[in-house]
Amino acid sequence: MSRPADLVITGLGLVLPCGDGVETARASLASGTPCFSELPATLGAGRGAACTAFNPVGIIPPMQLRRLDRAARFAWVAAHQAFQDAGFDPKADGDEAGERIAVAVGTMTGGSEASEAFMRPYLQRGPEGASPLVFPNSVANAASGHLALAFGLKGPSVTFVDRENAAFAALEQAARWLRTGLVDVALVIGVDGLFPLLLDICRGARMLARQGQPQVGSGRGFLPGEGAQAFLLEREDHAEARGARPRARLRSLASRSSPDPSTDAQAQALAAAVAALGDPTVDRRVGGGSGRTRLDALEARLAAAHPDWPAAHHPKILWGEFAGSGGQLLAGALLEPTPRVLVTAPASSGAQFAALLEGVRL
Image: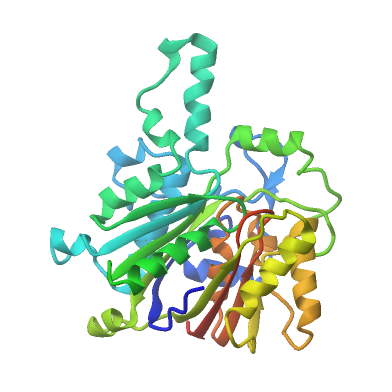
């Protein structure tokens, strides 16, 4: 566990199915209106939460825009918003400043859309069909590379590929870099994009077969979604020195893993992560349940052990299930003023995460 009491979140950027920007996301949460719709034909049949109104024109230069896949475009626009929100220009102090800025990305589908776009023509026409322009985006860390070039970020970079909460792994690594003094600022990104093959796989695995819309505890399950969440994380002294007003303090962050994939073992790991935060007294709670039986069961056991906690809010039910990001949970925690908010980010496998934020402001 890390206790980053001196770390603050100063910038927030969002690309969501309900639209881009913090105000749009806040209005979506306030109204409780889901972003579900019929997916465009280019993304396959069925219902989901796609960023159909997304428009990066004016933010991403035309030459770069043509060369990016959807996930990288989402990440670029969200990062642009986060830097603006924090009042921080990563290029203002020249090239040397970029060496003190890190980037950490969490995703599951990053690079997959480009991989499909690269392989389909190759399989149909042979080597002549393989596009060298598409290939650079076919790796998961393509988005972090594009961001580093776009914003002049020359510090350490990492991309985590996981299910449900990869953005929290990215946040944990960013906190580690900041606390060891390796960097002053870290851009943390959660990003996922929809593409035809992903939906074909989900349909084949019967993840899209359900009755009605997802509800916590219903077992109705996965509703595909996409978008990006960007968080600018800084040491508190660095933020104070430049006169920044933090959105929230990252009071503590914990993760626990279990080699046993059973629900009992994963529930114990999630409970241990929450216990490691120290003080479970909270004013608000954001949970990672979405109607998927496995994740709902983990959160239900946690809630049963803490009957004094407020009911969990589940932004994934409104914005869709971003397969690997999980950053929408942290975003949901930052969109309403709260003295202390607990975020739990359960996963089907791997690490279970919990985070405690303090002093969340508009």
